[in-house]
Image (cartoon, rainbow, N blue to C red):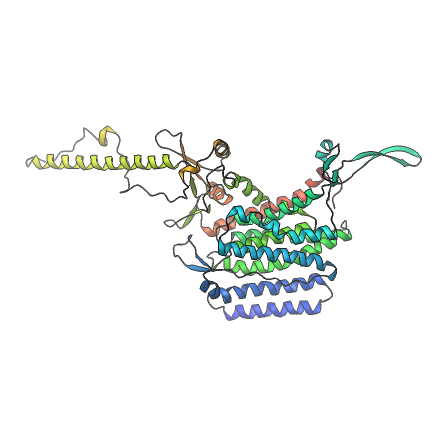
Amino acid sequence: MGQISALTAWLILAAEIGAVFIILTTAHDPLTVNLGFSILAGITAWSAIPALSEIFVKAGLKGMDLSKKSKQIIDGNPQELALLTFPNLKLAELLSALLSIQSMVFLGFADDVLDIRWRFKMPLPAIAAIPLLMVYWVHSGVTFIVVPIPLRPFLGQLIDLGKQLIYKAHQLPVHENNASSHCLVEWPSELGPLYYVYMSMVAIFCTHSINIMAGINGVEVGQSLVIACSIAINDILFLQSDKSGAPAIETHLFSLYFILPFIGVSLGLLVHNWYPSKVFIGDTYCYFAGMTFAVVGILAHYSKTLLLFFIPQIFNFLLSSPQLFRLVPCPRHRVPRYNRGTNLMEPSRVVLDQEALDAESFYVSSQHASEQKLGLQRQNSLGKSASSVSLSPPTIDTTDQSGPLGRPPSPSLPSAPRKLQYMTVPPSSQPNRLGWLCIKSFEALRLTHVRYDVKTGQRPLEMTNLTILNLILLKAGPMSERNLTISVMIVQVVCSLIAFFIRYRLVYFVYDVVS
């Protein structure tokens, strides 16, 4: 990957010395020590990727970047490692979290090598989260949630969830100053086993939402880095708040112990994964990032706040649902299409009706052939009439300025019908009735573009793939791969600002007491 300059080498050395100095001089403060190790982790990740690239290439863990004019072979990334420092009292939670993360990293590496099908890899995060959930049950086992204010009128009765119950706020008599009165006592809701199902779903969503919003240089690491920085800012706000109690401070410190090293290794990886990328991250990093977010959200008890930072990923999942659940044809890869002529990314399309598309291609080809044939006949007839005329001056024929068959002159057509470069699916994968309803709805909302046949204009032929990347290109127009990644990161930052506004301002409309 090339040699670094002398200035870069000195800067790296200075950063390493500074990180070691921080660790040695602040050994009494776990958070500061963790910051020093995070710097070392980022430098290690940055330097290890070029050093190990040849090993991955020789092992066959490489790929070709199809979104470039030059088809350069680039290698896969080595597994990210982070050095952490934790208080001993959190050792069990630390080990369970690391076991879940490393299990997900291993499964992601296996997916990159074995190319596991979606139906099999969908529940993998839930399986990897089992050690985390077991320690959660043994240590705290807290499955209480506070019922939001708008839902309290609907949860007035007891609901049996196995051996657990959901309670609502009850009117209980309270005697104060020898006067009988009533006050509203808020009882949290006990979900029991359903809470562990919910946490498993959080692990599955966090992991796969990063994976399905991918495909261009830097977008996976970029969005993960924005989410991680948002989580770190949220943790710092809790630590600086006077209203935060000891349990909240302890859990958010634990969150920072994971997020800071993650930011470090992600920054080191982004240097190599930024456009033009020198390394593929594959599913390994996506699973690593998603499980890290799930770990801090579950163990630090702020899974709802965590999901607020996933607003773009939630929108992308809802937008992609018709294709993910096979209501609409879904190709294997839905990444934007690279136009070699313009060097820009364009929305990729999926075929809705292969038979109609083939018929239209045949119709266009026939029209093209007839246009060429009539044009040649006209040229031959004009040539014969010109050769039969004597030496009289040439005259201009103004009786017929129209094209063949009396129609206006048609625009120039290519010598052969343009070959479709869109991702296609077999004709048997046509949408069902519910799928057509989704297509019509998304088209009405301008979330996709549907192309209809030329003859009737009523038969849908193809549509843009339902991803946020294609939607950005559909709204903003074709752009370079680098600008597309920047656009996604800007959307992620804006949504994080909205998440903070919801968490610290609008939350008072949903809950009475906010920690």
